[in-house]
Length: 253
Length: 253
Image (cartoon, rainbow over all chains, first blue to last red):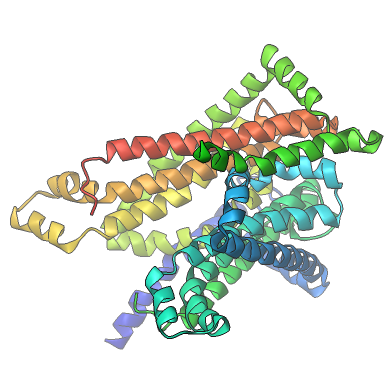
């Protein structure tokens, strides 16, 4: 029985392994030029070299620090703005139309405009990541706070809860789950946009590494970059999902 | 009348921003370089409409989006449905699909550009991949979350597999598939513009912006960004209305 279960869990590996084998076979057969279709072994070796020389780590750290700074600024501003928009009728009346209009414009399309406005330095990348992170968090925060049921406020009134107690005991637990989801979505989007920005204009970072090696026709380095980008994106999303589950185990939904 | 005033309050902030833009453009040469005066933007709009520049590029982007979208939806529905209906297919293809999905869409561009060149084929390939992922996910979800009682009715009536698919599974999966198309539409549009930014050959709004960036013609970039945002919004709106109309037979609780 246990062996059976082990075997059936191994079937998950079939397709990735099959793809790897196919890739290796086609690359070794020499149908395509070797520098266009690099065998997986060589990609692995390149990965080893890049990480041993510290080049990969340096690019990765550059990208991640940009992501951290941009996402930090953008999401905190978004959180603040979203909560304000949910709590104050005036803020909503004055800001909501502009907010929902700007929300429609994809970040990628703003890259050329921001390059002209801010140059191609660090500022431009941080601003575009912050802009990407801002909108999903602001939206989630405003919807999350607005979705707190009226009856909760009434209960708080009945118990004559003071404002800090009300926020800590009722408002925060009620509004946090959707906000955390907003943070997760905004983080993954910010990562995508950051890599795209680095592909277009940067002197360091994963995207720049990929673009540079593309120009030098080093497909193995490009592939290493793509895989690392995917792994980081997955890790960010996965860790936020774990956080969501840990924080909100008590919810019975 | 008070309603009108309340609505016009939402216009205050956008008008202030536009005013600030115009003010900055009149300050000095550097300001006029980044913030072009509104009159220049208006003149450029008339000029680009008259010589067809805007329309040609917009049409090229739209054609690219719809071709990629059609391909992505077709293959996405095929794969999603087969993954949901056959356990074997799910086990074989699922892991590969979910691992490939982690790489940001625009990260594939350098690799695809090296393998397939920077022509029309690469762009349509990227757009269709962008439409493919959400379509597979939502189709899978739609087909695998059919209510058990519907399946049981199908068993009671001894439907053939084809009848079961046509009369039980498909109607139940359609709403989720409509959501998939909505996501696919948004992703395809953004990715089409993004791919044109990277692979600037041929016509397209992204290419128009890249050329404008090189010639630092801010007015063209502003117009393109507005055009991209507006088109994205209109497409989403149209499809939402269309799907609501087509799915009106569904009784919503």
